[in-house]
Image (tube, rainbow, N blue to C red):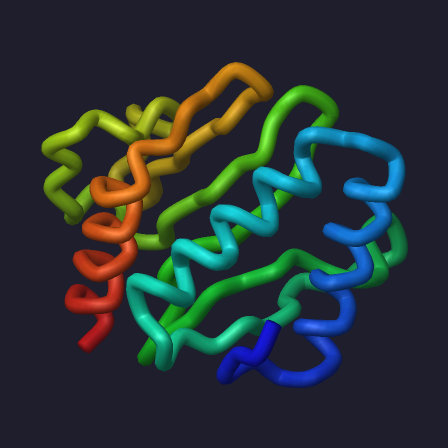
Length: 133
């Protein structure tokens, strides 16, 4: 996938998606779809890796445009997108379903049975970018 991303970040994320897809893990396909939707919503978005540590040497994939838009993490039973300024975004479609009590962040937990409302998701991405610009 050609992106405005740093090459290291794209390589790390590509490898993780490929690894999950090779295992037949639904999370790989979901990560790839969400990533594609993010880039469709904002072709100028940049992929970064942040917060690398011993327990997570690759760090966390972060999508940025004049600041953090969202992070993309995988857990045992979900793919999680955390929007840095999610509490300030109008979520008319009700996609946010996690971190709802926080003052700043909001998140979307996607499980294997979740159908993503692609148009509403892209609207959230664009709204997050607008907050940063």
